[in-house]
Image (cartoon, rainbow, N blue to C red; front, side, top):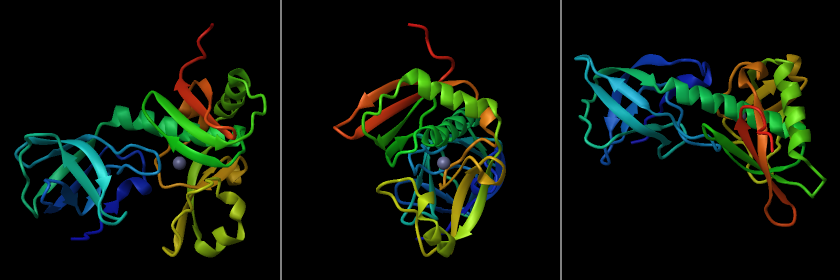
Length: 247
Ligand SMILES: [Zn+2]
């Protein structure tokens, strides 16, 4: 059962609702649709929550969204004790937009951090109120204040954030685009999704399949909450919303 799901959020991260058809319900109750606006957990960004509204107005609450056997298949995991929809049924999808928008702002903030801290990335996790990015970086005397100032300079400049599709060959010719130390973008699919910041990607561009806001200004006020040492050459940066608290 490897039904491919048309991932509408890849072309438009701002879709809050859409109609879709039930393609299958797997043996664990996971719902597969022909198309979806629900982002599935991957690349450090958690999947969406929300609901599927049926023709009679009743709702099936979705507690999590995951990828299936392949990355092209998206599984909508219902909350406990929800009705089971029929294959072929059309439903109206609605994501928890407030949560998703926070994740889009945070995810974009993580990209900004990789501009301010140009070191190889060893890990990242986005969440609504606190995100982290791990870098393979020596102790270069970073301070929360300096990094926050660098981030806020990018936010205030209100640079556009957009997606450009490039070929495997273009990526191979520009190895510097990949900032992850251990994770390589999937090759062989023909097209790589490059997330660009700034006019003509002047600020940054890197392969990413997540959802982001459309400008750095929309990220809003953020600060570095903590810089932690994780081993000799690893530094973990925590990003939080709002101004830096006064000590
Ligand atoms: Zn991203």
